[in-house]
Image 1 (cartoon, rainbow, N blue to C red):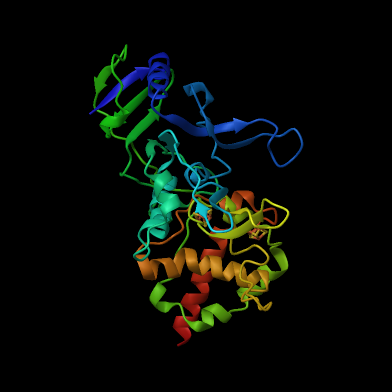
Image 2: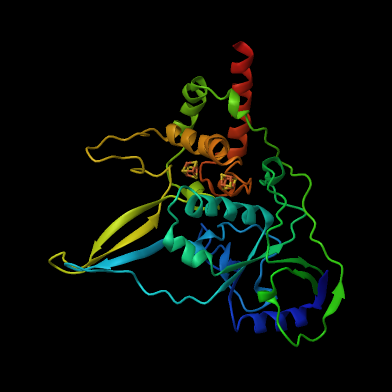
Length: 340
Ligand code: SF4
Ligand code: SF4
């Protein structure tokens, strides 16, 4: 069951919805591209359908809306700590199916990874409703079908953008609005992409050995990767952060503790007190990320971490392709197991 709305009626729906929610979607950010006077597609607050960028993939994932790049965890004085007040308006976020699957992996890390639940993540995440944007074509670097992330079903609403109108399926009654003009009841189920241009073959986790970790393949990435961390920050499933204590007084007795995104490719990420670094070489960091995304996470949670959105390929200034890396790794694992 769904409803069909003209674009005008859908804008009326968004206007009514915005009384209760802040609404975010992929939008064109003018002048924010990587070169002067170029644009980039990222997430931003919208009021109308016309602001939503439907035809291009967003360069950044939607995670920054409910998992901020920088967040103050608490303020401290001599003998007191205080968690900042939090009175956010609920959020509606338009996402593609791969990102909706990616959010589930973030939830796994922050909410279902052991007994402790991440308080800061949860209080924002609880406020979010997702509208899934039907995605049947994909983009050049996507490999969601290989990762099994082309379909998602745990949406609060789903939408198909048509020429001058939309089809909408509202699952969560909290997204219903009253007195909507021009509403026509229809049968609507979102469809999903069935094939990407890029395909990956994921190595069998039971055949990955210590030799896989020691393979020469990783040296290539030491010479190519510049440790910029773009692949981490653009990834919907990268969740790592670091802590910063910031002094707010001359005598350092008042301050705040922040958490700030970081990632396994970034210099200093695996440094310990005393100066030892676990993954000094950039190829070792690529190995860690790759194994985490398509091997280790699976062993712990029974699903792969990567959703095949292809953003890491899109953003890498060194043209390092994660999908090609997975395929190379698969060949190595196959060769190694054939030689056993
Ligand atoms: S590793 Fe790359 S392809 Fe996989 S989810 Fe992250 S950004 Fe997307
Ligand atoms: S985006 Fe490319 S160069 Fe930058 S850290 Fe990732 S793999 Fe390395």
